[in-house]
Length: 363
Image (cartoon, rainbow, N blue to C red; front, side, top):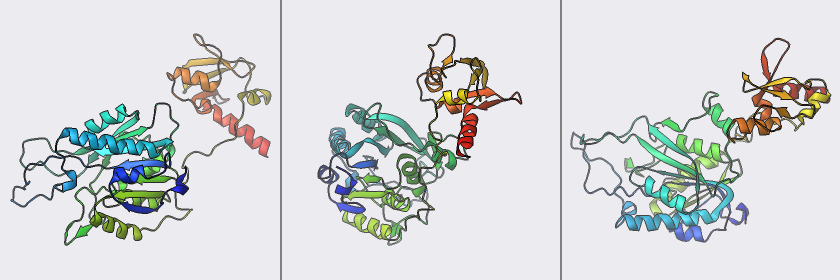
C-alpha cells in the first residue's frame, strides 16, 4: 500500500485505535504522537495569588490505573507500527508521568530507539507549591521499526538550522508562543498545544516533501499545520469534536511554501560516484602515498596501486571500509574523512581531488 490509499490531508474523527486499524498497512512515512500523559491530578492547582492554574484535567487524560494506561498504550503503538513503513520513524512525546512506560512498551513491540530528545522549556510553568523542582522539560523518543532499518535523517538540514553545528539532543525552545496559541472565550483552547518550532525540527529532520505524516492524537493540529507548510501530506486522528473543529479552522489558514521556499533534501551537493583508482590513473594520487584519517598525521595508511589502503593491524580495505573500522563500525564517507598532503604542506580532504577530476572530465 502507498500514501495514495490514505485519506490524505484530512482530519479523521474517532477513536485513534479504531481509525488506525482501518488504514492501509505500511502506508505512512512519519508518525508524531502526543498521547495523553496520565497526569493523575488529584486536586486543582493554584498560584500564590490564588488564581487557578489552567492545568490538564480533561477526561481524555484520566485512566483507571497504570494497567489501563499500559493497555491503551500498547494498543495504539501496535496500530501505529502496522501503518508505519519499514523505513519510517515514530516520534513520541511525554513527561516523567508516562514516557518511561511508553518507552518500555515500544521496546517490547520491537521498535529500535534512535534518540531521546530533551525539549528544555525556556519558560516553564513554576512549581507553585514549592515542593518539587520545576518541571522544565519534556522527553521525545525517536524510533524506527527495527534495528538496522534505513530511515530518513536530514543531517545537513539540522546543521544549517544550528549555525552549521551538528544538532544535539537537547533542544532549548519556548512553550507555545501567544500568537500561535488557539483561544476560545479568552482561554486556552487546548491545554497541551505544542509550539510549531518543535514540530518544525521533527518534520524537517525525519521526512521529505511529499511524505506522509500521521498524528494519532491531533489535538490543536500543530503537527498537521507544520507538515502542510513544509509541503508534506498529513493525516490527523482526533476524537474530540471541538478539537477537530479548531484544528480544521487552523489548517484552512495555512499556506504551503512554494517549491523554491520549501526545503528539498537540504545537504551537500551529491558528486558522481567515482572509484579512487581513477585518481591514481589520472596521476592525482600515487601508489605508496600516505593518506591521513580525519586530519590526524598519526593515523596514516599507505595507498596501494589498486586503490586500497594498507594500515598496520587491518586488512587491506577501501577508504570507506577502513574508515568505518577506525570509527568502530559507524558509517564513513572516505572522501571526506581521508586527507592527502598538498604541495603547500597542508592536509586536504580527498574530496577536493574528486571534485578536481570531475571538473576536468566535465570541462
